[in-house]
Length: 329
Image (cartoon, rainbow, N blue to C red):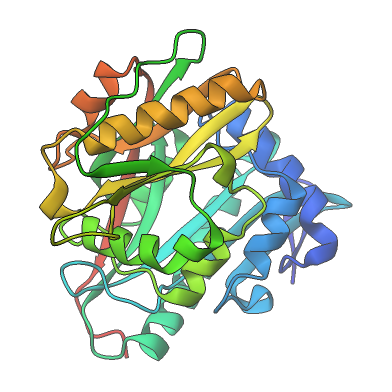
């Protein structure tokens, strides 16, 4: 499909492996102009196209002005329901700053919503659900656009960061071993993650196939990750907490996921595991800072834990939802 807007002819299609370089260029442009710092490489985006359950030809949208990618969109629907038993679809996308105000964002939302509802109907027929999208920082154009299409802010997430010049001490906890994860820990950490996030807003169980893709992704950094394993007692050998690190930006470590199973909370295990990961990142010489995102309404008081370990707020972004009141079939 080709559309003509204010003198510019736009060509619409989908994203393929040959487009990941242009896609990364656009994503990184948006990370700067919108202040989100959500950078990606072409290799990272190529992995997204190969993710289980993804059909790039139908689940992505590309908008070209000549040979330049100026807009993109992608949607996906997890195979599992969220913690409230609802189906959810995630929408992502953006338009180059020089091509905004021409209706491209509206058309992208329309395309993505149509495909998302098709996927919801296929994977979770007759289950109540919603569409979910990132609302960016306060005052962002994406938040205004989504608001015009029936989305509302339902949660805020804080990006926190700290430098690695003075790592915190790692507390020793009786009956707990802190160590670097190995491939043999993959399933145990998945089960711990599902247990830890069972009561967290918007989360759902991670199936083995999706978890494996995360575990072996090129962004994963197991060498600076930490698992806390019970030694002795009824939980002997079980993963009690985990800090899985990743990297998308040069010299920046990122805590992709962190959690503690309910039975082990209140003992400082997550704090010790995170302190260990901070120390490993500092000692490696490969990083200058470490960052993480946290739900501003986290029921476990995670923000206070991070502040005690030297993290400070960098910015706040919004999560937005549009409920689907009618059955998705």
